[in-house]
Image 1: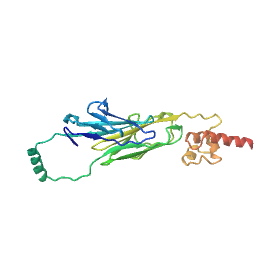
Image 2: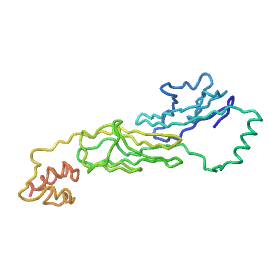
Image 3: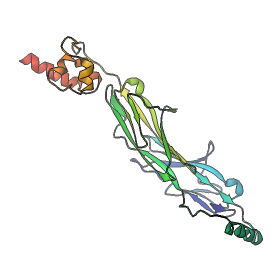
Length: 254
């Protein structure tokens, strides 16, 4: 909280490699931190001087490092300076009430720590999300702006998104969103799933093996099952085309 005619410094916590560029918005308008009552500081904080009561509201900190974009909402409350008499009346009212001595809220922040953003079809995607803030924020995940729901392939938690048996349709922008009663924040990551080319020589032979059971039991690296269930094993991501080709080449040499 800040007082009218005073000064406020709004901060947001972002880290990244490369370091992100910080800009600030109010509503849909980007704030110019070089003119008027606004100053964009070297650490990315926004300083507002000569505060007015209508400066109260939500400011959005936007961080972009070329690989991803993250946003954090910061709420500013500008208090009107009261007279001595009105402050005395307020103190008397508070002395008769039950006052909660609570910890100051900590701005919500999120950070996606993916080691790659390109995946092969049939592989597994696992994105950890670092979430901070007090009170403890609620977390949900989105794909292309639509909230994700758990399924046989999609596993969700506050700290991680996991999708198994990826397909090209899983490509898109994934977001980790966190919010509490004081602030909210989200980070996004572009994921690309490449199509999978499987040669005609890599096929399943159901006469020798139940390939669905082989895949579910993770037996694709067995020297026989990898040949009997070549197509299913490659599509599941348990074995690569290169491994299959190497195996076939060694069999031909024998």
